[in-house]
Length: 194
View (spheres, one colour):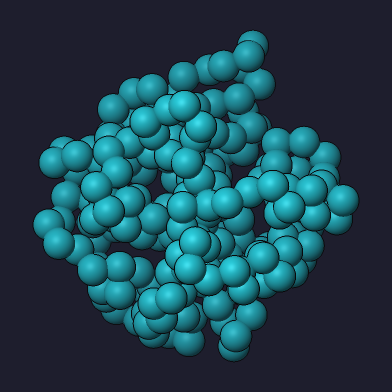
């Protein structure tokens, strides 16, 4: 697990930087200097499930619904945690408590990975979700992954805005019920439509 204090502000688009260190200084603006970013490798550290569970259960109903794209509760969260094995997790902590999270999951039978993000209500509208997704994409690129997908409920305009920050385009799926974005992580700092 890597841990770092994040307090420097730099441009949001870090995907094109070569050899970018996830412990770099671009993550958080100076308005929230006490936040700590932790990069978790779930294959080596199994202590991530409970902090993730506690974080997800602190989401309000609307945020939990948007995270799972369906009405959800503790039963949904527990079933989800019992079956997932993420490639990596980025926890954003405030005073040792996870307040935001980006999970990167391999997609069985596909060459791309999927990113999911959640931010507790009190920390929303501060750009943390966007910064987490960009940090996750930078770490994916550092690991040699070439494509990252974002799926969200069509009504989740915040997540769509985050995905569009990569200059990608959405593609409606299932009668406009879901939006999908594909972010190419190769040498091109931008994204390509799904």
